[in-house]
Image (cartoon, rainbow, N blue to C red; front, side, top):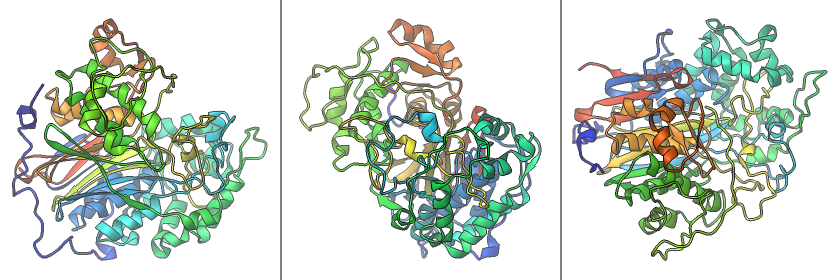
Length: 593
């Protein structure tokens, strides 16, 4: 196994030249409203960029340019991240938007401290443990019942107030420009629209926006969203109170409770439970990050209600306890960590985070990994603080995971001062619940389908009043000696966890560069009978893993990661997917050598 400061990390040095912190300022000076430049004209996406002065990686060129424009005008990483997220609400509306939510992991370079902001959507007060029982999953998704109280706007305001220099009005300007002027429809946008067309047509507001003339906008056409541009303008002027108890909130609640179903539609669209009081009660929250150490580096992630930080961290701890690490060990560590995730993690009091991330628990779990795949399903462990030889594994009931697509999105931003943001933003399924708020230009989320439907006594992820559904989002920042090495994350439902884990192992254990680590073929084991894998992974490792007792099944595309790595002498490498989800966009402020 490779030690932590070997060849693969030779390009990563965190000397004093890395962080150009201004001595008299905690953050860069605030910009005037006119100072934030709109994204420049359409050009080709590049998955890798290297340079200095700041870096950004998203799935979308316009969003990356929005962030880069903020950085070039003196804004910091948080300013740029909010600008990029709002722009993704225009260009990636089926994955992100102001009616969604997400998680931010933020490294403050001046204080050398990691913070997180929970903007996860919440259940209405009227939702109880049995609210989703007996409802087919697809029916629950396309309904008012699936819409959680949105968290993104509250998260943006808290993030800018605590760590940014721009107002919300300033940060929304690039997104307003893109929504007004339009963006070029690419194959991914067309395909996602076409895949949703059957349900989009069942809502008058959604069909009007995304099925003009009754069909998806053709590839190469320009798509404009003037209603969203107007919504962003008003939001910038009126602030989050417009949503959280104001007139926009009234419109959201009306849409949730009485969706605008197309006359003649036969779809059974259930009304939702959200009330204006639920919006008034919502708060974005700062939470302590998860933290564990791998190969001497500190890995920070998101705590519950996300399971990302705990599950990635536990799997890394298990792997570090093993004498060797390869594809088999990666799959088995993932299997065990997901067994514990399902048993212990949710938006509940008393999640045993300290023990789930302890070395003792990891060693006890690691001793279950042998030369062959363990019997399915793996049982959860007992993170009780008393660890010894391998315990007898009790039987456990199988929980089958469906294939998960590229829903959700992730972005990474680093600025000239060394501040870093890793940010997952989502409206849950691709296309959310399929319902556009009439006249407002944005889709509602279907986040409440992330709850366990039940009946499932004792499940930590059953719905409840005000509860936030368990998430797999795993924005991750890695530090060495309190300075950043790497920031990364991905979309993909529960495959987010395994995607982030696999990239870290590719980078640190298999000796890949960061671009190679993102491009490498993926597999995901989430304590299921079969391991889902991309074709190239099956071609490369399938025979050996099958011999060792694994059962592999095809999943054509897993994740769509974005990352930034800190190199020598203050240089940065921004990396996005080369092909998955149409490829991503990596940019740096200055490419000068």
